Length: 255
Length: 340
Image (cartoon, rainbow over all chains, first blue to last red; front, side):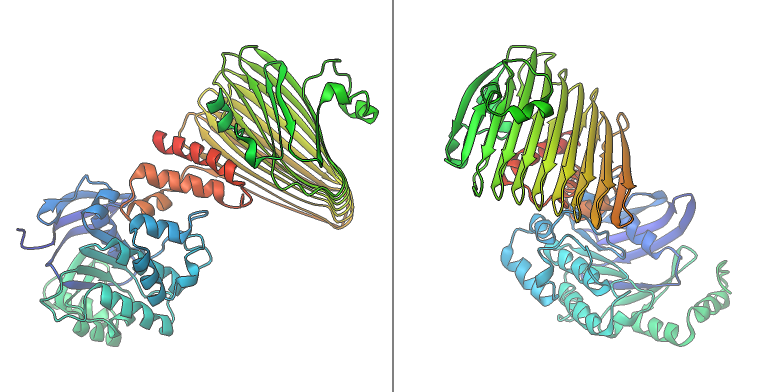
């Protein structure tokens, strides 16, 4: 069996005409949740898109291994069926597709749909068109709901807290805790996650393992996620650049 | 033959209908009313009695083929009248139909046109008179062989506070089809024209919907959905606000499934009265890649995701779809998912 659930080696990725990821490495074990911090536009979402296989994101070098096997060349839907699930940052609203219908395609258990919809306060949204007229918080809750029903082994969450008010952050993070089995002690959890956060507020409610900072298309640091977050909260990303310079690295994007 | 007729909404056991009218080639094969409030006659026979029709119909042959249907005043007929025009052997068919909903009546019509031959030519001329306070819904389903030619023209007269709703669905487009509709709306009347056109390769389709809001407070909505799977579609929609306090909205949207076809939408609004309020939206494009990859990220394969999006595109807004029409739409969507 592979040592890591997800292993990314020397990953170079273009999004459109631009090279965004430049030799990125990350390894995620079963049950681990990793947090990626980083200023806007550094490539956090591109990384998640590359793992999921979203269009317009092209891997030019390196490899993404899931359970020891390369994901390159495999279509989005097949990656999902292999056990990778994504919570999008900006999910589309789709006319004429009723939320309940989509959920039933993902998972046929009516009881489970009802339970999760109530937990995420989306009971009244089931008969509406997908994301149509949903508030910022409802859109994010809807993503978490779909992930629950999809039951993936690796959860990719792209900014699950952006645009969500304080009251709803509690609801969403409670659901994420359950999704990521955070009520179990580290080591007993089975589901893994990569969580992207710009603001980091959601970390006040989650119990994550490893934190990284994305700078210049690479992941840096690899330390305790709360420690990194408290530093970023205090000084922004300025100290990250300083720290990297002190270690002899020359980040091009820093000031 | 039955299979073809079923596809266009004509069921053999007629328990669910208020009447039936079937033309095969150039003869009436079935004609029956199951409601004492609904008269169904061959048009040729009724012409002698209904002299007033002459000015609307213009010159027609003595043996003119088609129906004369009348819902009597105050009739509330819940089950639809089903009609079907089938070309089995003869290569040309010319139909004239007249449909009258008298004052305060409510009536529904499901009308199908189909063929089972090579290079058939179908012409359909229809007149609808919706008298004061009456309500009519019409669903027309077309299902043609690839080399057929079709011309249809409908004129609708919507009386005071009357309502006319039309759903026009083309499942299999012919080589060439032109479908023209025009409605004149009196005080407080309302018209809805909904159309769904699926145009396959080598098909040239023109749909033209015109609504003239003539009376005070007249209202109208046109919703046109075009899907090109290689065929050319031209949708011309026109609305004129002539009466005081008239309101109208038109929407024409299209999806191109591949690069072989084209969709050309021409939405037109004309305000004659300063107290009219008209608006339109139009959007044409390919299936959104964002929507497609979103659904695929849930483990749904590409063909199914595409058919979900197309079905959503068709379902949105056309929310008065009668159940037996849903069958036709499901067939259409099923076909798209196979091709995707």
